[in-house]
Image (tube, rainbow, N blue to C red; front, top):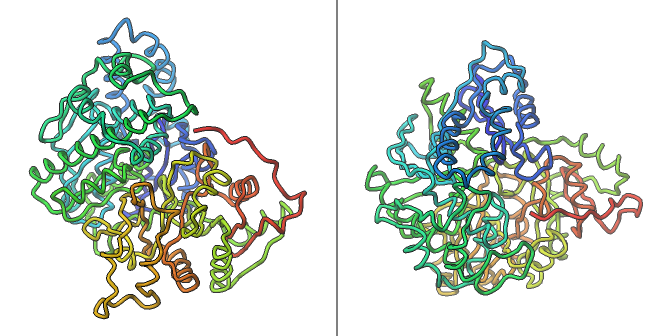
Amino acid sequence: MTAILGISAFYHDSAAALVVDGLIVSAAQEERFSRVKHDAAFPRRAIAYCLSAAGLNIADLDYVVFYEKPFWKFERLLETHLAFAPRSYQAFRRAMPSWLSSKLTMTRELRSQLNLPRSVPIVYMDHHQSHAASAFLPSPFEEAAILTVDGVGEWSTTCIGHGRANQVELIEELRFPHSLGLLYSAVTAYLGFRVNGGEYKVMGLAPYGQPRFADCMQHQLIDLKDDGSFRLDMQYFDFGHAMRMTSARFHRLMGGPPRRAESAIETRHLDIAASLQQVTGEILLRLSRHAHARTGVRHLVMAGGVALNCVANSHLLAEGPFDQLWIQPAAGDAGGALGAAMFVWHQLLQHPRSTSRGDAMQGALLGPSFDAHQICEMLQTHGAVYRHCPQREQLLQATVELLGDQHVVGWFQGRMEFGPRALGARSILADPRSPTMAQRLNEKVKRRETFRPFAPSIPAELAPRVFDLPKAQGNPYMLLTAGLADDQRLPVSSDDQAPAGLERRHIVRSRLPAITHVDYSARVQAVDAHSQPMFHQLLTRWLQYSECPVLINTSFNVRGEPLVCSPEDAWQCFMSTDMDALVIGDYVVLKSEQLPETAAAKRHWPAD
């Protein structure tokens, strides 16, 4: 047996992943256990979970792999601050303590934190090599082009690579400060949202605006080439030497000062978001064409934080040269821990990989699960009034009846998701046909901005009938958007046979307003019966009950907090919001039946 522990830490979204004899046994972000969103701390709780899931101790490990090279990163930091000195002094002074205390002594830090025997070697990966490995090695392809795009690793910000069999090769790169991820983050900060957390809000704002700033972005902020390479004009940006992202020159170009957090969103802000999204899509499209020209293969895999931009991904797939696209569901830094561990197994130790069963991510359900005893004990501790449904059919029927009565249902089942998306294990579910459901969820449950849309989940076999997924591709991880098919694309002629239990007229009549964004798009999850059997069964039962194949699926959390992990987390979130019901394991809990003394005190949720 060979056990390999991958770790990402100290910047954002710290995580751990355990690979045993090539199988991904467990993976989780530290934030799920610490309850600190995007937690950058050493992932000791995530590591403890990963080892316990395999029944291993630290001494049982054969390798520990860190997802990047700290000395290379420190080299970039020093060179950047020296280039901008003395203006960079304050940023340099703030960065130094963490480097001097732990990052420059990473081997000592890892051995100390883990109590790791000296017999267990520590391997350091290149940041983008970890991303590339996380994109290709678990993918369903024998060969693929690789595209990794993020803010910055050590020096690289974008890499093109080639994956074949069990080998990952990086063949081209863009280097700091020329970064699509940092461009997107700079505009995110300018629009009043938090960097490394608010970028998806900018993506959600974009359809409300017009891309009237796209030309000046593409011709003044950046110098974009046909192959997707580009250079940022650093006169518009301050992230190289200051604690802010954009300069006064940038503010003049965009028509005013940065938006203050929580202040009113102006039409100008909407147009800036739309422009940034258009430019991002164009850059990724050009990069993909160049990757295809360099590799000559039919498939593309992606990772890095920018790969979570599902709108740009869909544009790339629809307009680009590749037949199929696969994106690592934990595409950000958390996924680097997994890629690092898989790289050691496949490339350094030269073990083959198999794609005979599709991707190796197991539906991204790699986090902890909790048994009936643990759940029941939590409910009893809180004095909850609950109904026990030990038979799955009974539980599914109770759930669809609640949804049919327009209840908002917290759904807590099986292993927790790895990555930022709720995929049917830690989800909040609701009926998408209600014209008021989206507003209710945003205001009363999620407590977030009203412009943000909700994702639909649908059985994978029915997704092409309802949504225009590019090239009819599956989308189990919510990393592509699709338009809601119109009546012309949903014919009801006698030779167009519908799947069993699904009449065409019901789809044609249903407009699904709660999951359709202002541009008539949706971030679809096509649920696979093999990797998500229980959630697929729920969707099928919902179709039989409601004649609608789709449910709203949003993450089981509120604004400013991570996805729930434990039954206790689920209870606290349920009782502190206006969710109507909680279906947790085999138990159904209704808010209306709880005694006043069982209710948790209302909390002030942090902004994110």
